[in-house]
Image (cartoon, rainbow, N blue to C red; front, side, top):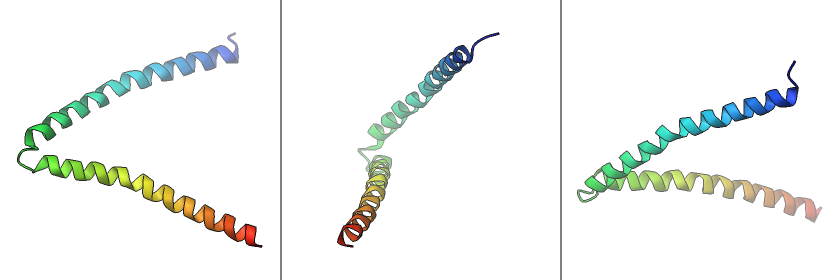
Length: 82
């Protein structure tokens, strides 16, 4: 009978290999998007929209983190004033 640590090791290795093989096609998609954006950037069509979408997706985590830290700061300030 195999030990539980051996089973965990084999499972972790299997998951790692699965994630590595799964990430390869996702990386190829980014190259295609870049090529399309570069080709249409001169027209101002898709390239400009793609850039605005990237900025929007980049801004959302910063806004959420800022709101979280603001709430934590307010709670910490209220607790220290008491």
